[in-house]
Amino acid sequence: MDAAAADDRFADLEHPYSYLIDARLHAYSDTDRWVLLIEVVGYNPRVGNVVDVLYPVGKAVLVEPNSPALRLRRIDNVTELFDEEDDEWPDPLRQVPLVIRGQQVHVDAPQDIEEEELFRMLVPQHRELSLADETELRRVVPADLPEVLRLDEWHHETVIRGGSGPPSAAAGVLQVAPSDVEAYQQIAKVLATGDASRYRPTLPPNTHWSDWPQSGRL
Image (tube, rainbow, N blue to C red; front, side, top):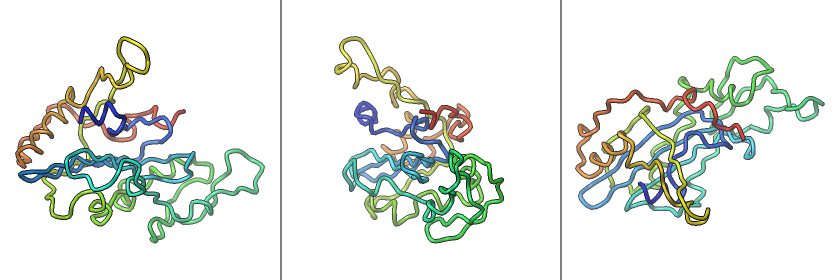
């Protein structure tokens, strides 16, 4: 996990380009293999869509780091939501149902609502539509690798990079690493043993979007 974090491949709930909407953690293991997979769902204005970003770490990951299977766009009709002919900026929202993965969803929201606030209203009633289903997960994780733990909330801390020396050398130095975080220490024990009871958190969960107010702010 620390190696992935040093290589900028560990989950970031406060990514400056993406407004956090939801998150989920999956742990898979058997006697020889393990994968930790964290989903971070966010609204990315640069992409113009809600994207479920999958962050897999482990010995059995099936895809390369830049695979399209790791970035799943969720809103089918996003171009129909905004009135681009209006002179206002940002473009006001049209009162049309959202279409998420082929399913029409009505959200009772005011027309002047911010995009990220609209998409956050999908949780919790429609949260499964934005998170990965089993088919999508198994594009990344072997079908025969058992899931030993699934968390819809946990205590996360942002990985902090930096250190002494030139920037090129400091980039991979971690001041706060996953191995410093109680949740990931315990999840590592679950992965090593296959025993979900090894996860016994003492810190309150903080993976709700309201706990990461700087997400998407850049």
